[in-house]
View 1 (cartoon, rainbow, N blue to C red):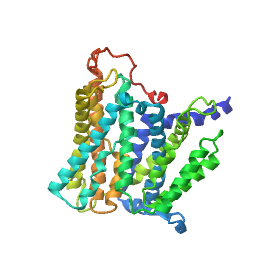
View 2 (tube, helix red, strand yellow):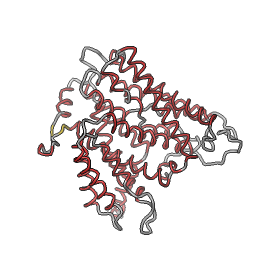
View 3 (cartoon, rainbow, N blue to C red):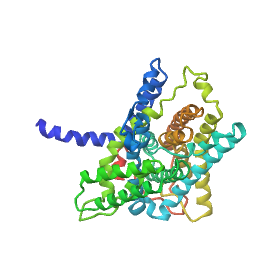
Length: 424
C-alpha cells in the first residue's frame, strides 16, 4: 500500500506549493530570512553568499548569485506570467472588452497615480538620480495579493478574485513594457534577433503533437542567453516564451497547453524561483549603517515609495474605476460594488517582487537602493495589513441585490474559497 501513496506524494506536493496561500507564505518567509540575515551579526556572510560568482565567463555569464536570482530565476516567474497573459488574452477574461475593460483601466490608473505621486514627492525633496525610480511603486505582486485575498477574502463574491487577477496580469504586462523600454542597458540587435529566433523555434516545438522537454528547455535557455546579451532585461525572454504557448486545445487534448505548462512550471516558480529571488532581493542592510531602519524610511526615495504604493495605488484603482463606470458603458462584474475595490486597491499596493526588481534596475548598489528596498518591504506589509482588515470588513457588510449598479440583479457566482485557483 505504500507504493501508490509514495507515487501520489509528488502530485500532492505540487498542488500544495501551487496554492495561493502556501506560495505567498513561502515567499514571505524567504524575504524575512534574507532581511534578518542581512541585519544580523553575521551579515557579512550574507553579503559573501550574494556575491559568489558562478557561470561561464566566455559567455559573459559569470554572474553573482543575487544576479542569477534576479535575471535567471525570475525569468521562470515571468514565463508563468506570459503563459497567464496568453491564456487570458485568447480564452480568458482579457479577450472581452466588456469583461476586461474595468480591471484593465484600474490597472492603468493604479500605475499612473503612484508614478505621479513618486515623481511629485521626489521633485519637491530630492530631484536628481532618485527620479530614475519613478516606476518602482507601479507594480503589483500577484502571488502576495492573491494569497491575502485567499486568506481574508472568504465569503466575498468569487468574481472579485478574477477582477484582482485580471488587474494584476494587466499590471504585470504594463510593468514588462516599462522594464523593456526604460530599464534596458544598451541594445545589441544581433543578440536580440538571436533571442527572437530561439523563441520562434520554441513556439514551433511547443506546438508539436508531443511536448519534448529535452527540446523546449534548451531552446528557452538559448533565448534567455541571447536576451541577456542584447541589453534588454533577460526576464523579457521568459515573457516572450510564455506568450508563444498555444492557448487553444491541440490534437484533441483535454485542456490548452497554456494551462498544462502553467501547472507544470508554477510550482518551480512558487517554490524555488520567487523565494530565492525574495531571499536575495529583500536582504537590505539597515542596521549598523549611519542610518537605522526608521531613519531609512525618512529618506525622500523611501517616503515617495511608501506614499505611492499605499496611497497612490488605492487612489489610482478606485478613482479610475469610479470614472470608468460612471462615464462609460463599462460596468463592474456581477456581485462586485465599488466598495469591494477598496481592499483591492490596497492589495494592489503590495509591490514586492517586480518593485524590488525595478529598484535594483533603477539604483543598483547606489545610495538610494537600501532605502528604496526597505520602503518597498514596509509598504507591502502596511498595504497587506490594511487590505486584510478591509477584506474582513467588506465580508461582514450586507450586500445589495445589484452591487454593480447595472440595473439588473446580480447573478450568484459563488464565494471565494481556498482552492479557487485550481478552477481558473
